[in-house]
Length: 352
Ligand SMILES: C[S@@+](CC[C@H](N)C(=O)[O-])C[C@H]1O[C@@H](n2cnc3c(N)ncnc32)[C@H](O)[C@@H]1O
Image (tube, rainbow, N blue to C red; front, side, top):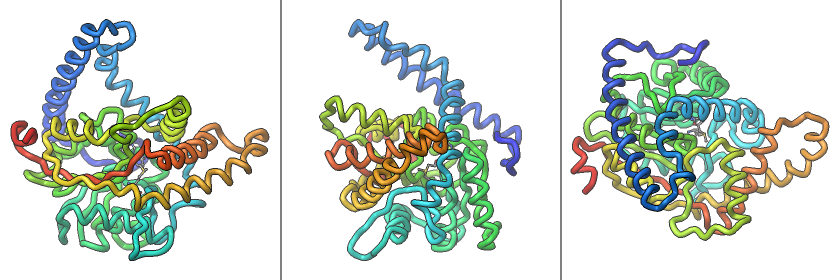
């Protein structure tokens, strides 16, 4: 829990429910790690793969991941507001540019529309915006569909901005920004009809834990909709591609860039039945190119400013990451995917 924000009050029964959910997820993780360890032994790779350490270090991994994400967004908040998000969208995601719309801001709102088309949204339905940024989608969901939205984030600067906007727009009774980590959602089981995760999963240090939490807080047969940058299934990675991928993940504090097939496996393991998968890379390409162009211009400008100490390493890393994203997208190593999945009650059903 973070100091300084109005955090959700956690009752004993919430804690118990969370403990039970965590124990079951942890048990699944442990068996997954055991499986990986025995595979590693079989392959004679034990020295290279410290599987047990990664399991035992889950808590510290969570803390470190959180700290990296918080530092990244705290340092780049002004860059996002100067170059990317505007008052009509309040978005920290990529845009979808199709034949029906024009302009950057409209493309950012269009991304919301593409996700919304995957799920059933109605007045009064409860949505969890997991990794809400500065609250753009949460506000949009309330204004467009009349949903009640709980907006999760771990970055204080984002939450503060979201709260200011929600208050300014008179939406305090329907949008609730809270400081909660999506790996440890301090909320009751079965509280939401829809979980919305727009470009936030890439920061997760364990998608299995995160999806497990999404499944726990969803009502029976509730829906998860997510959008993420993904590694193409048969990506051929040469040395420069690997360097670009490294620049992207370190510069943007990403912990889990993954492939579609791995993500589907993880969703099933967490109790979801995937429904639809849409590769929207071609619609997102102009937005990625815009980001690359902005970053290249900024990169020229920053050399001097970096030397004078005006730019932090994190801001410089952000620019390198934007350029790397553009390169990797152009060569087809990365894709953009929107996915929806339904919570199922039994593992067997999820596996179908
Ligand atoms: C790329 S931004 C997308 C924000 C928003 N969904 C949007 O589309 O504008 C990712 C967001 O996820 C949040 N985030 C990252 N890790 C998180 C975590 N463990 N728990 C909650 N939020 C997290 C970040 O702080 C950031 O606001």
